[in-house]
Length: 491
Image (cartoon, rainbow, N blue to C red; front, side, top):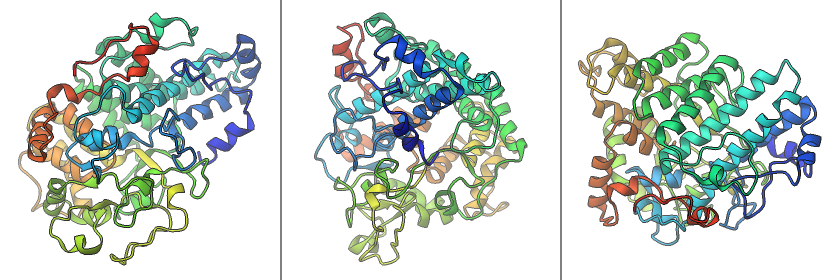
């Protein structure tokens, strides 16, 4: 969807998903009459669906520079994920963004608050569309409904992994219904809703689009949900991954660089699209990943940790040169101190001159898509499902694992393990999917987050780390709005 925001501008004033500054969790229309008037045709319902993608895409900080509640969508997600893993950090210790990599995020953190808000904005836009889905053309009702549910499930999956049990709202509710809006539900309840929504997507979506919900996207996301939920469903995840593989509609790009710069390629299953040079449809995270010749508003974010560089040196293969780079005198070091992520270089970048890299004419308004799900992820999930939580000699699991490794330049015979271990899988996922916001969730899902991140925090001197820091605090503003009904995570 390259023109999401343009579509929204065309319906400004009619769209019912904007929200009061004090009720962002429930973006209700000013009156039921407004809602009924807006959602009165198939075109209106479709515009509402596009509005859900707009919330997912988020607002570029280069457009609205305030840090307070601007619904950045997924544009700040790397702070809550990569920075809280052992992959990356902020270049400086200043500001609330640096709190993430040091495990000192407090309930007042404005980036966490914005992300929490953004996910609920997606959820409530989806709920609004679903409330009036019967006004769509009968031939579109099933697919529109499945699409809205897929996006709702995606938002809830992000929330439950980062914040734990959260309020579960699946319909439009009145603004003062605090019990519905602020009662935290169990992990089992939240996951049950996510599963139900994604099963609807598997049953009622088709393939064809990579920038909107599809059957394969629902299958891949549901497989990951099955592996993550409190009681993993390994067989269900395996079957879903095999359905994607057997569809023949996706394949690994021969050139790893093309995954990120030949957008919507054969490897991409679901991506969030942006348009370069247009502040209303662009993203700003690409420029924030620069440091040596700073192009963003910050000093440098997603700076690569040394132990990840060591893993790239031993296991990255041809992915290494596409994943990170160092400039100036830092480029001469075997383990650079301030290496930068280059999977998402702003459009027009030319970093061949390590002393004077160029980032094009408008790096803060970048058009690089954000890839949510790609085929190599599914192959590694397939191996994980077959492992069933244990090391394995299963040939099919090792085949899927090796398909990703061979693309990276490793030998199909000489580098094939006789036993696939959890550590093997984690390492491969780390170098294959680095900087794509998977590492933190991988560590959680495979049950080693506390061991790995505790050791990492100790090595880096992050003394505030403890196992409770694996969950982010519920934003203080939400607790205040709930009049105390919304409870806080232990800190």
